Amino acid sequence: MAFKITDAPNPSFTFGQKLDATAQGREWLEGEKEGWKTVDPATEEPVKLYGLLLSGIVPRPIAFVSTVSEDGVANIGPFSWFNQVSNEPPVLSIACNTWKDPIREKDTTKNIKATKCFTVNIVSEAWIAQSNFASVDAPENFTEWPAAGLTMEPSTHIKAPRVKESAFSMECELLQTVDVVIPETGEVGTTLVLGLIKCIHVRKDVLDERGNVDPAKFKPVGRMGGTMYSTVNEGYHIPRPNWKADEAAIREVTNGAA
Image (spheres, rainbow, N blue to C red):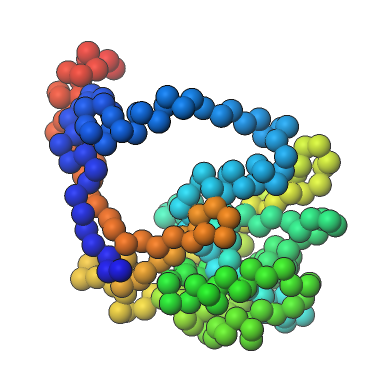
């Protein structure tokens, strides 16, 4: 399906407008009649909590991470607990869960801590199957590259290679790691990795006339709950309010609140 620009859900929105002012809003509010389920993470079964969070925090961008061990073993894997942290300095984050039974760090985490570098490669539809394979629960120090069918491309600033098939890759130096401990056991449940982006490789054919990535050409893939993935087929523009231009109208509906 080709990417297309559509109208925003409520293009006639005015400041202070309630949700029930539109047919779509009224339909959404009907769902409140079913009530809410309240979940206490401290008492919920870990497996159920994991599934609920993955299905509710969506869609998530996918960081396809490439690392190399101290012994030179190349590792790849997809991580959807990932996002940009800041643009100045350019920093991104990924969170890497530990393996359970027994608890041990994933090769990605160990390699980043040891070599202080990694690449993040954004996944497009054309190679989602290859990316998904790299999520296999392989033994330690196993390289997924040959079976995934992906191509190593040397990076320009760091040891870890980037994925040639990715149209948007970032070379990163380790900025900081934060081990997140499970309160009940004291064991590390996940490690938050902050990476300083040292170099970006972007394919020219996915750029628009302004030099930004065009989603219609890029065809990025996101993660949903369970084994589900999502594609980006539609988008719409919603201009940001401007305080200087809209202050009077905003204050009118807020009774002049400071």
